[in-house]
Image (cartoon, rainbow, N blue to C red; front, side):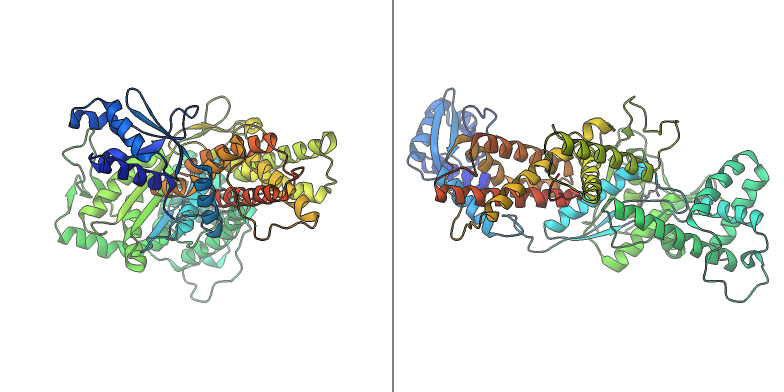
Length: 595
Ligand code: ARG
């Protein structure tokens, strides 16, 4: 379905050309004076220069041409030369009827040639607990992936585990201290290794921080860890087997955590999967003359003339021949191109990694790892701060673990829902339902609280605000959906039906406003996809929920006596609910039945 703004622009453009003016002046935008009109065209102001005429004369002519046009209920030329427009109510209703018929997509056109896009997000590090720093990557990445899927593209999420670093050596060394008798440490052992891991997830999570602390205090310990890492990376059998166990135990736990966040990945690849691609990649960079030795390290220059600040060379191998984070990311691009030949790759990390990605992307392009038109995009997000404006911490000042944070918000939400039950809306919700609902609403609170900010900005994680049922919050959106569900349940509960009924021309101003909001859906979604901007979905549903709630407060839906009007209301409610639900689904959360 064409976007409503395009349809309007087409019509206005026709009027401009019919009056002898260039088509480019017919562009229509949303009104910035909603008190005066719904849409506006400022083309006459610009045309005035070219045609050496007063702008209002041009606007008058075009308005005259448009008078009687079925698309508009008002076309007004106002001085000094604006065209103010209002959409005709019947026209708008027809647009929504078509939207409603386009079930599932609600007017969004699917691409002729879907793109394949890999979204690299999550980025958890194996054996280290997930902390709130990983939360944003998971939440934003999941939403970007879902928006792309909804828009008909082939989106592939890859968690890109951090499974290739010193943390592995640290765990091995610590484990060796505790259980030296384990067969993994016996270099002469040639048999099969046990299938069962020699540790549980809680042990593993305790082992890493202990080892990390020791390595900072004890140089010999640190050297041993580096040595173990090195041996692991060079294929020592027992260590490889341990790595397998660490991965298994960790990934099982990670999946559980991501599940709780309603986040899932198509690919569970890690840094270690890129390692086999490094030697050939490096050789080729050398052969092609891109990589050269500088201060003992192998580097590729990536600076460009237009750079405002110095972009240092991308280091491919350190002087001891070891690979780095950038090497791994480059080799990851190699296998992704080989296996998926994607049209684009989108990476989500903290914005402090910006320089890293500039270097990696430039290097990949320069050395031909990607095609000229492969899009590489890094979305660097800001920090999640506490109310004190400092990076979010636990009450005792430690790094907050994701699970604890979720627990805390679940509890807060459960309290609110239970209170709500006692005070105003005794719906007879059982404790069990209240718990499940609290979880659903809590997730919406966290995700909406995060996604409603532009990703690159820091934001303040404010539990009280995020969990509020009022204002620009996840719970408010859910509350609106639940309100619609409850009206629909009441209506259908009476044995009524809407057979043959469609959305009619608006009967009131608040109804029209709601309809205007709904008609913006396809344009908004397309824009959110193109700009990888989930916050646009959030601000849209906030406006839509507000428009619905004013309609709800201004009209008696269940008490409407004219059945035909009531049916049309119900159809409108159904469309509103469906659109809100699609939106929260791409944001990665869902609504309960009641709350
Ligand atoms: N594991 C990394 C971290 O915790 C994030 C990985 C991001 N993805 C990437 N391809 N570099 O910072």
